[in-house]
Image (cartoon, rainbow, N blue to C red; front, side, top):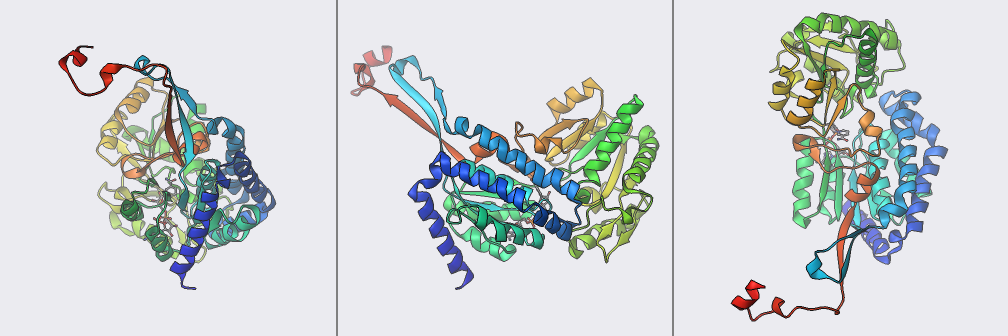
Length: 462
Ligand code: NAD
């Protein structure tokens, strides 16, 4: 059967399931969430193997960022589901007495999830968990750039979940395009701003609500901390968030650092020493750094360093091994702000440090650029923290750590401006995939004659 026809058949089967009403039942939602838990438990080794194959991810990192985080998310959803589904009573004005009113969440219907390759399980299943918890039916299209992970998802999900309600469709841009031609009740997209715009265009045709989880350049402001313990912890957290998280191929990874000029040589020295402790003298031998996803991205990253003025700014690392898709953790100081490494999202293990005379200048620097998914600031300066909170805009703002915000169910995850819109995780996911229906209940006990036409001046006085 031609692909488009097959997708239409799959989608109409999903609609039928949704219309049957079974996905609205709490028991169905619970059974599906438990299915995901079982999948994660029983297929853990397959998941680790696929992540090794696609990205050279160590299984400890894979557990931290994908399996473990997902197990936590499902358990959180199972714990909160009853209360999330129960809605909320609200008050109406006294003029409407006697009335009762409530907000009741209802599922949106048919959901399309298009995900990215860097956390192929996390970025696929995290929204699927929210969509199921909210009682929807789902098509998941994982990224073709992580083929082993995509095929684990496609080959296992139907054994653990209701395959009349949750389907995986594999493929790349052309499959994505075909899916976008169909009518959905919600599209949840994780990926680039370029494709995000296409998603938005396609959604406009059916007025489909969209969540766009995009990327951008997440800065880390690094102040010259005074206590040596604080300094050491900050350096470890920066390196782990950059090189130790999918080799910098992370939407909330640190893209670049802003630091004072007078602190930069100390900072570089501390980063070098700690990097050697984490990844050894010869990082190519380390199994704690993921590999670059493919040759295209490898060449893209290599080209960033090939610009002569950028190459001249390398102070640490800078070597490549194309055969193994390995790029050494690399630190640069003051590459030109007009160079591609400073104008486009890096998405790899290259870490530029941009120096400023005063750390406070970082605020103007950030205000003149697109709003990032996250701003990180390593500082104990309360005045600076306050200014950053009130004067800059970003999806999230994190002080003295990085990446932790992703794992917090109680914080919404999402962007603003160029980094996207909509939010998810924890109860926010449930809400993102629900419509809050307003229900008002009135009785016939009281009534007022002046609320009805014909209009008179006397009625206006009352
Ligand atoms: P991408 O936009 O190229 O691809 C994302 C998904 O869209 C993939 O499934 C892909 O197959 C599909 N796709 C590609 N072209 C399409 C088209 N024309 N029509 C329909 N679907 C299409 O992005 P990517 O390379 O997977 O991811 C990198 C970007 O994603 C970075 O900017 C990164 O910051 C961002 N990202 C954001 C988050 C987040 O949670 N905010 C997470 C990971 C990645």
